[in-house]
Length: 177
Length: 259
Image (cartoon, rainbow over all chains, first blue to last red; front, side):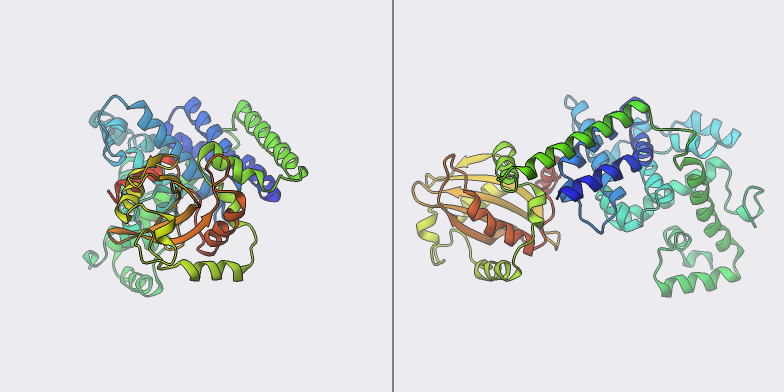
């Protein structure tokens, strides 16, 4: 038990940059993201023993961070009617004007990410940046693997479009070979 | 040709997530189909770029305040666990304290090393036994409540909540978790008017709840089952590879699915 906690402590500190990156993809404000990470670490230490050895520690932490985030979003909206997180596209905006602008200037990936809905943004971070498998991502997000795949494919097509990676990227200068 | 594979399949190919047979089929197809090849490359390129740009770098260090706060947290949790281990009752206390304080069984205790034979014996002895059915060997004396009343409580109460049963007993939900088949299970305690309490685990089976585990336990001082009967429960939970207790939100979601 003690060894497990000891271990969790070390791993938490090593994982701070990744946790912060993921939290930022959800909260988008640095102070809010830091808050989220801190809260998640607190929770992880309190439940250190429930981490299953042999499974991915980072996936476990991402799941905690995400649960805390959903919790917070729900609490902030207690006055309003309940909506599914999936339907909250409006909050993160598919703003026509910004999309247009980005298209003209060929956005960087970070800029393009800002234009994606939250559920796509978090998934790109989990799979493309943190190298979680589809199955691991499905577990973190609590959705079926089919949903993961269609959502991630949509997100990446949009990213490609916004950053100028065309379907014929073999001819795109930035693409290698 | 290109229509043979959808975006998801091509993406999974780019990510190395396809099974061998499908991967081989895609590989063969892209050999003489530039459009298909370009679509695969698009997925490879988005991943590579996202990774290159978004991977946390030293240029964007973790704020010192955050790191300090987490380090301090780790340190104090380490001290606390050392203190608990030093105390003679340190190994027992956390379970009990956690149950009392939060109405939750501390997840870590489920992985305590236990005699496998004990776990198997208990599991074999109680599977199929239906709480409140009236046919079990000791069910009628233990609980007067009908199965419907208990199922109703399992379906509606949150962990930590307690309800009076029509038969004058009480039911208290301790925690929700999922077993190794991802089945939703609830651990709970039933207090009859007099006599032994019952500590039980029921899991969702189709439209109803099946009692998977039940053990009689003399009621403790605060009405909570004493630690000794918890050993049997833990042996059982460990045997079914019970997952950690669901968080409030996970539980709410799971219960919404069975209501």
